[in-house]
Image 1: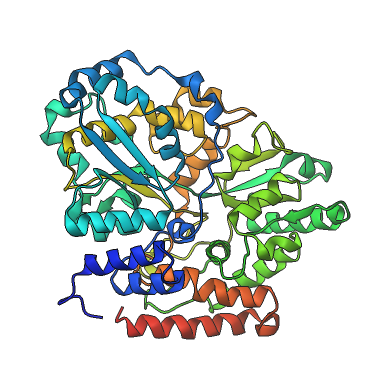
Image 2 (image 1 turned 120 degrees about the horizontal axis):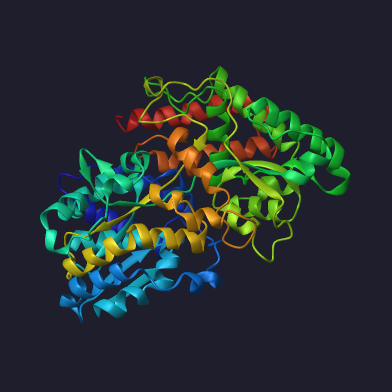
Length: 505
């Protein structure tokens, strides 16, 4: 399809609305979006059609109420000039968004600025944002943007770094741009030298293990894939009769979660999804090793693993059905919740390392092989905002050191700021309990040293939620391929390489 005659954003907005209203399938939506050059991050693609679960602890938010006097004074001095204005922000249920919605009174009271936070599924976030920018409507002042939408929205959002420099009268003192993690700024917020927003959310893979089960069998916490594999097999052999398996997987046939597991498995074996010649490489030697390893892990996981997405995997962990996983760090606060059956039993660990990683220069489409699979997003200011100054003040407040730290304290999720990781309140909460932060040292290390990213290409959202998990699902459930990993991956290579060629990529 050519977009020389047909407005790209109109097409995308119509397509996104059609999917949000369930008039077209997810498969068709991703195909159309890919043709128009709109991709999704790893995590974002998986959230389409799904509801994100908040596993923090809002019940303790009152313990952290009452922001610093200097921040309140700044809000009153600067923000009160815009008293009576209303700003609107649309987002999916990210941990920071959920917490900000809980504490927004601390912004609205001193400023008199009304804030409406609309929390909807990700496909509706996209549909609303696209419709807004296509018509330059200004219906929303702030956008939550998946990291892979940067190219599409780059000309419709304000560079926050430049704005901070140019509007000194509205600049929050000590905002400190250097306090944002550089890997997150580079990976989430920058597009062709322009900053499109402020890093806001970063789900990432870490390894987690049951301390009591490993201790029971005299097994040390693993640091390598080989040690992980040996531990998983030993625990299954010893505990299967008790309903406990070595690991639990998110291997739901046809679901993006299965693709996440597979991607990490081939990276760990020194492989990649694409090579620098832009050919699918899941069927090379490293790719086949990774898939065969994953098939072996399925033999050592609860049978429901092939019907489980990430929520199902979390439920296995929380129910005491498995002892070792490498998966999303967002699980951890929920494992320590007051109503958890495994409270205090799980421990965080740096993601296990496998064979030497394939070089980024040898992978394709901007893929970054590493040991910590990630997805992320930004908070961005619309160029068409009806109340841009009021929205900019809110954006600075929401992403300030204090508020981001307090969001972490309430939600237990990975913060964007270096100071939040180091904050004494965050360190003090690194103990067993609701909203725990005791996994965050591991998360920070992973962001700084092992953050991996899937290919940055428009068609990837479709491949990662259609061709790959569908064909992998047929393999792992025995519907096709007779257990032959090479046969499965050769077929996937044919499907994907043909579409890449057709798209002229």
